[in-house]
Length: 378
Image (cartoon, rainbow, N blue to C red; front, top):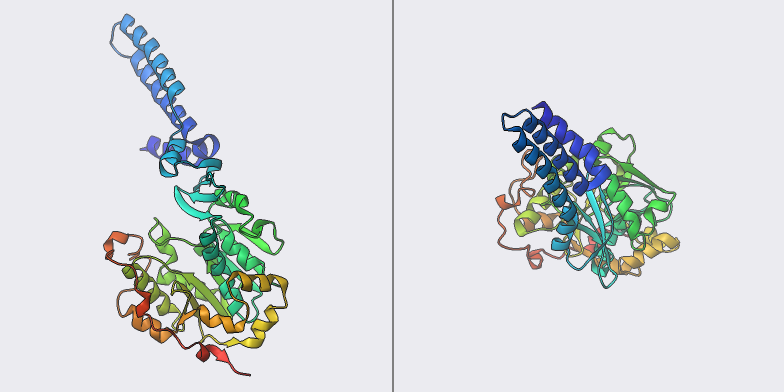
């Protein structure tokens, strides 16, 4: 048992991060070969037999090593065929790989899962998760982004005028990989107003004394292992605890109808004044009812970074905001209906086969909200 524990710690925290999977397998195979040869020397076989085996086994092992391929590269070739590995790091927390297609698109994968890319559609999705709360909040000065990923969301937050941004990323390897996507993340890691923390997002919020005007998160798919901790009621309550008065949180939601409704229902249980934006996949949570002022918006148009963020959202002025608005809290509650909520002890979206997977949400059934109810008339 001691050997098993020591071996797992050595492989995960020392061998893989320093020499990679192929060399680690060779080292472990060499240790097994050495152990076998030691046992052979103590066996009761005839001396000539032991000599033959003792010579043949290392030769066979060496031949296998010589002809072996990198299992990591084989995995990438099978899952992302036709793409070139630009950079890779097998880290302690996660394995990050930067790939490039023949057409020049660059992408970042984390533990084999696609996380971010320079593709136009994906960039727009990630950007609006950062821009929308910064545009809706009257004067955001401090912002928190959970998860760096490719950096597009954090970068979108960071370009708005006068904001100080904390970015919390679990894996250092992901942060190093994000530098290859500078052209779509606004060079986020080089900005003086951005502070990167390699930490668990929930742990960071538990320990920080800071309060934030805006909290948002990079795209984290709910069905990935461990992601249930970022969709539970406990997580959303933790987010609420680090908000300033008047603060807001933006939550991206995706999945099947059952997954979507479970997440939204959970979010509403913590933020009862939630409004839905875009197709309904962006939730803006506030403690008090959301109120918007034309003067706040027009002021931002005079600040270069904020004006760029507004344009990147695909709008030009305050009168374009209704194009992004989808539904108010009452309509949203009616759409998702009653049912269970997600908790740390019951992360149903992570164990996604426990939920029906027969259809995607039908947003045509989500009533269009009256945007004028949000607008403060001076």
